[in-house]
Image (cartoon, rainbow, N blue to C red; front, side):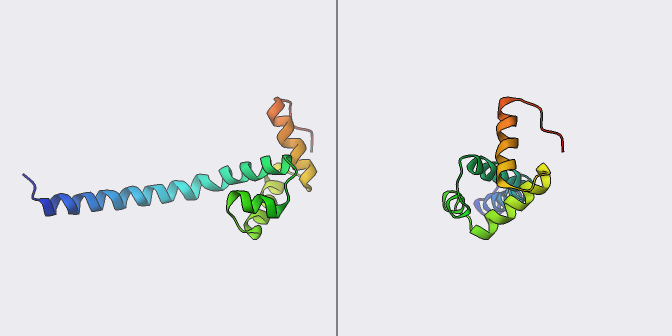
Length: 97
C-alpha cells in the first residue's frame, strides 16, 4: 500500500506530465484556432483593435495572425480574407490564385 507522501509525489509527477503535454498541444493547435477566430472577425468587419479586445490579445499579435492568414490563404488584403472565408462557409471552391 502506498503511503500518502508517495501518492502525492506520484500525483505531482503525473500532473506535471499532463501540463507539459497540454503545453505542447497549445503550441501546435492554438495559433490555427486563433487565426480562424481572427478571420471570422475580419468577415464581421472588425478593426484590429476590436479583434484584439474581443480575443484578449495585443494589437501586434492580431497583426501577426493577419499576416499569417495572408500568407496561408495566398491573399493580400482583409477583403480577400473575408471573401475566402465566406466562400469556404458556402462550400464554394476557392478562387484561382
